[in-house]
Length: 498
Image (cartoon, rainbow, N blue to C red; front, side, top):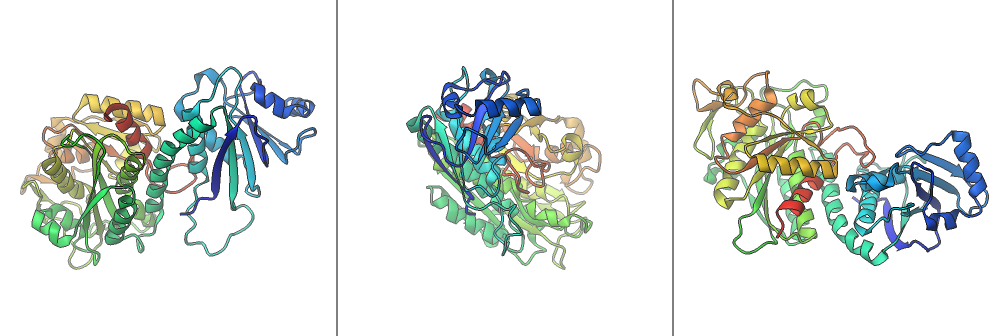
C-alpha cells in the first residue's frame, strides 16, 4: 500500500511549515527552541490555556487556529506529562497522537521534538516517526473514490530534531520494523478471495526475497511426501491448495542454531463441517494473523540486517466445508507420528501448527520456538484485546517476552499449563483429540500444541484478541493491527542478537 505521509527531518532551528505541533510538559513549559518559535504568540497561547483550563495532563492537547503572532495555519500543543519519565513506547504513542491532530485537509505539518529539561535523542525521534507512520496507515486498495474530505490526501511531515544525522540513521532501523508491521497489516486486511494460500505464499516470496530472505515453498505434493497430514486435513475441503512457507534469514554466525517463529495462516475459516454462524464470519479472513506477523517479522529482521539466524515457518490453508472436507470423528496422523481424532473441524489452527512446529523442531533444532495464532475465542473472554495470551514451557523465554511486551506496548499475559489439562485432550480412539471442550479452551489448545515441541524452549501466543478487529489506538486505526512484529523484533534485539 502507498503511504499517505512522507517524513523528513531537519534541525531544531529550521523554519517550520504548515501545521505546527509543539510539546510541553505537566508544568506547561516549553523547550528553548520552541520558545523562540512561539515568540510573538505568547499572549494567544496563554489566553487559550486559560480559556480551556488546560493543565498539561499527559497526552492532552490544545488547538489554536491561526494564532495571532504566529505564521502557521494551526498550532497544536501536546503535553507529554512528566518529561523525564518517558519510555520508548511513549515516543511511539507521541507520534500517533501528533499524527491524529493533523487535519485531513492539511498537506504540510511540522513536529518540533523539543522539551524542557529533557533531550529527545535519535532513537526516541525515530520512534515518533514510526508512530506517525503507523497512525496514518490506511487500507484503501479497493476503494474507487473518496467519500468526502475526511479522507486524508498526501501529507508531508517534517520532524525538527536535535541530531539530524543520528536521527536519520535511527530511522533506517525503525523504518525496517515499520515496513514489517505495515506488510503484516496489508496481509490481514486483504479479502480471502484475493489472498488464498498460494497467493499468500507468492507475496511472501516476492516481498522477502527482496531483502535477502531465503524462501522455500512446500505445495500439497511436498506436504504429503513430508507427512503433514494434520495440516493437509484442514485444507482438503478447499479448491485452493495448501502451502507451507519457510523463510530463512542468516544474519548470525554460520552454523549457529536459529531462533524460530511459526504462524497459523488460515486464510479463511468457515469452520469446515462444524460450520461457524453466519454473523461475523467475514472476520475470518483475518485468521492468518499469526502468519502475517511471522512474515512481517522476518522482513523486518532482514531489512535492518539483524545479527541473528532466524527462521519463520507459516502454515497456509483454507478451511472449507465441501464434499472432500474432513469430518468430526476422522483420525489423522500428524508429522510427528501421533494420531489425532477430529472432534470439531473448527478447532483447525492447532492441527496446522502441530505439523509446522514438529517440522521446525526437527529440521532446524532452534534455540527456541514461538508460535502465533488467532487460535481461540476463549482468550478474548479471558484477556479481551489488551493482552495476548502467553503459554510456555520455559520461564526465561516467558520473562523475556513479557519484558519486550512492556517495552513495545504489545503486551502478553502468561497463562497456565499443566498435566491436569492433558486428560481433557486425551482420546478414546487416538493419541489425542483436537479439542478439550468449552472449559479452559485456550489452555487445552496450548496443551495440545505442547505435545509437538518436546524439550525445545517454546512459547505459544494466542493473538485472537490483538491481531484483528482490535480496538483503535493512538498508533493504529486499521482493522488489521500487525500485532507481534514489534514485540518479537524487540525480543530478538534485546536478547538474541550477537
